[in-house]
Each structure stands twice: as C-alpha cells, then as structure tokens.
Length: 138
Image (cartoon, rainbow, N blue to C red; front, side, top):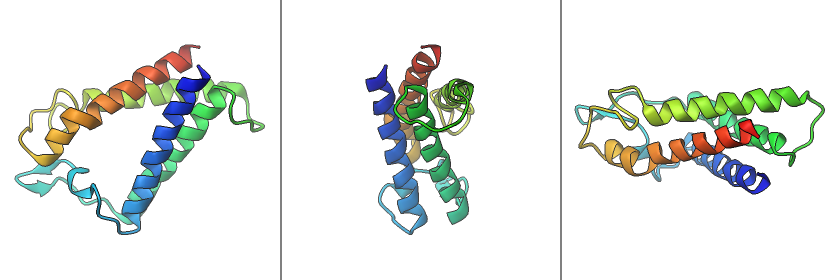
C-alpha cells in the first residue's frame, strides 16, 4: 500500500508542478490542456486558477502520503481517510467526464484535447481514482 500511495503522490506532485509551470508562463503541453469548442479553448484559465489547481494537487499528494503513513502531521487520521475517499471520487468523476467535452463519454471528438483526453488524461484519472479507492479502503 505504501508503494502505491507513494506512486500516486509522485504523480500528483508532478501534475502540481506542471500547473505551476503553466502559471509562470510555460507553454509546454498547454495547447492540449483545455477542452476546445469550434477550434478555440472552451475557457482560458487565469494564473490564479491555475495556481489554485496546483495547490489542490499538492495538498492531494500530501493527503495521500498522510493516508499511507509517509507524512506525519498532528491532524486526526480520519481527515486523511475521508480525504482519500473524496479524491477517489473526484478522479473517477473526471474520468467519466461531463458527457460533452471531457472524459471517456465525451461527445466532442477530433480535437487535440479530445485525443489527449482519450489516450492519457481520462485513463490517468481512472487509474488514480482506482488506486485512491484501494488506498481509502485499506
């Protein structure tokens, strides 16, 4: 369980750092990071929103480490347990998607984002969600 938790935490930390990179003006990967509508991004995330996602991913990584006993802080254990259940739900919901622009059941196809979402983003969220379910149950 510790290895799975550490692996998930590393992935979440890496995703957090990618969002910090984007917030700082980095461009690598940003073209396919947002769903498209009629060839244009469905929304343009602000620097603050991007940093907010980075902070949430970092907290998620720390929460997973706390759940598997690799991060010790003076907080009740139930916060890590319920937090992990919540994270599992969030990532599984992201994998399923909104039935329009993202997730396994999206209708918009043929865009750069849709291709990356089908091949990487949704499968990654499904894997993270299932791994987090396993950790939460443990």
